[in-house]
Length: 355
Ligand code: 1HN
Image 1 (cartoon, helix red, strand yellow):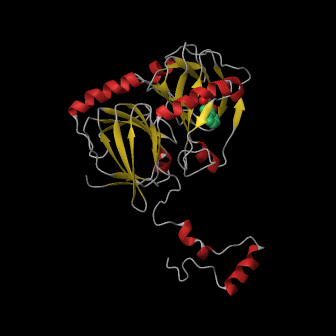
Image 2 (tube, protein in one colour):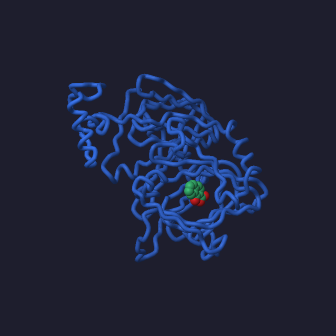
Image 3 (cartoon, rainbow, N blue to C red):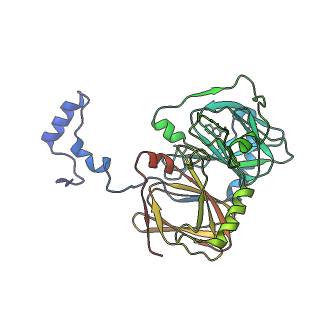
C-alpha cells in the first residue's frame, strides 16, 4: 500500500477524472485506502476519568432541573471528550449516570438497544424487566436485554444513581433501532422478585428450557455474591500479571457473556498490585467500586496519562491503547466493553506487555 504522493492533492488530470466520475457516484479507492484500512486502531476517543466528587453534585442538581417523568430517563451522558456531540463514551458504547429520586418512577418502554445498570449510590430502588422487579444495591450489575419492557422506581427514602451502559452506537451503526412506549406507566408484576434467580441462577435450569433471548436470563448479578467469590479466589490465586484477579459475568445457559454486545467483568487488584501493560481492541469503561489505585494509559504518540481513582470514579481506556494498573489499597473495578460483539465478528485482539 505505498503512496507515491503522500499528503498531496491529486494532480489536475486525476482531479478532473475524479470530478467526472463523481456525478456517477464513484470515487477512487486509492486516494483513501490508507485511511480506510489502518495498520492498527487509531481511536478518536481519548482516555478520561470522571471523578465522583466532581460529577455527583451535577447529577443531583439534575434532579431539580427536570423531573424523571418529563425526562423519561434523567441521565447525564458521560461523553468522551474526543467524540464531542456524539453521546458516546467509546466509539461503540454509550454511558450515562441516571438519577432517580425517592418516590419517582421512570416509565415503561422498550428498545432494541441493550442496557446494563451498575449501581453507584443509594440502595433499594427497583428495575422491572419483562414483569419482574429486582431491587438494586451498590455494585449490583443488572441487565435490560434488547426489546425487553423495563421501568424503574425508587420507593426508598434517598436518591439512587446508577451507571447506564448501552450499545446505542452499535445499534445505530446497523440501523436497527426500534423503540416503543408501554401502554401504562409501569408494568404489572407478573413474577415474584427473585424468580429469574431461582429459575436460572442457582446451578439449575428448567428441564427442557428453550432459549429465546441472546442475553442472560439472570438479570441481576448482586455485588454481595461476586464480592464473596473474589475474596475466596484471591487467596487461591494465581493473579494475572495484567488484570489481577479478573472474573467475567456469565450467562448460565452457555457460559458465554451475560449480554450479546457488551462484555462485563470485575477486577480485584490487591493492595500494592503493580500490573503489567496490556492493550486490546475493545475500548473499556471502568467503574471503581472499592479501594484506590492508579491507571496509566499510553496514548499513541507516546503521550502518557495517569488517573488516580477511588470509589465511584469512572474512567475509559480507548481501543488499542496500553494501560496498566496500580492499587494503593485493595481495589475492585467493574468493567464493560464491546468485546462480545468483536469476538463474534472475529475482530477482537489483545496484547500483553512486559511488567
Ligand atoms: C434507557 O432506556 C435507559 O431505561 C437509560 O434506564 C438510558 C439512554 C438512551 C436510550 C434509552 C433506561 C437510556 C435509555
